Image (tube, rainbow, N blue to C red; front, top):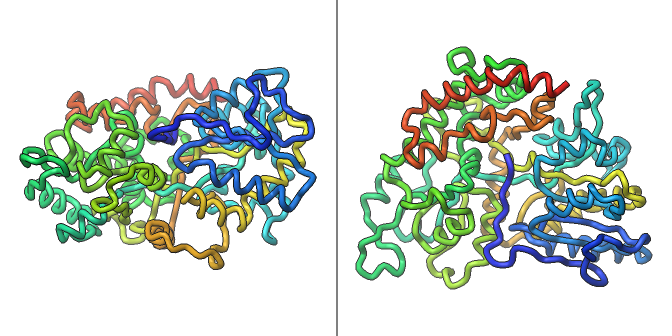
Length: 470
């Protein structure tokens, strides 16, 4: 799935040391040229890392091109015979195609180099260790990209609204459902609604970004099925794995989706109306504005919320541990889905400064770089780091660190299967088969039908996907 970053105001910013990046990418041969996504983690972190690296290496020149549409620029430059880029930090499934076509340089040697007294491959967070290897059509495995961030998703809430109304943080799904009933029945007027005709809803969502619901549903899936069974499913070794009558693991996903429908189905009445066509930016702003008490999102929501001013007295962001389903198994209850499988740090094969790019990557993923990212981006890189020396006073970050530490098991949706690496298949068969939007717009009330359709789609395309992956 693609992680969607939203910038409420400025969509594009080109930042560079020594001037703007030229449109033809015709930049100095003695400069390390970096293209990086500029989204809700912002760009202060990369500017700080650039400056700190130059301070330690005074003879080095670095130019940063940071923009929201980084993927478009990267693909344009990769197709050019005059590509002077040296390092990419971005998001998108295109990394798999670029790895398959050798458009990205091999990082096999970098994995064996040392950062903070450990090898790079051991510096990678556990949930991403399998994803650093790309399986070629001949069966060989190589590293063409390293992960970027380790994002935490789930249910975010307005702590001030909870405190003002005496609402307790739910720890179970039943408690969450009861809380939704309480909020709905309270009929609390939205801020600015003078006549009190429009009440605060339990939830708000973004209909254009319904893959955000994965961050909650996959947690519930893991609570029932467990990380190991999900990883076994992600081998994609049989179309029958998508048959809920034959696969307990996939049937667990169906159960998790049914629980989602109890909260977000149109008949429940727990969501702000009219958001099926709203993008994340609009929904996030209305969440901050007090339209709802909770929202399913990723931790970049914190930076997005900081862009909205004037709500300090009525809004403060919190994130809760995913409430546990009654169907959950005790040994799986502390399992969490981590966002970031589709992100990448990569070096174009055409770069003439690959050694310098690799050295910058090593600095970026070091403890020092990880600390810079926390302080400047309010997020976490996908690498183990010692944060004991960093002074964090931010209330949200402290709560997120505590929450991350409370999960004993973490996983992503990466698969080393060639059907997946060729962009043919995902957990839902294809992303178009996600049932969320069809439920939200009333087109699909019966989830049994949705999962039958998923299995039918996978069965019909399985042989073609298999042939294309060879």
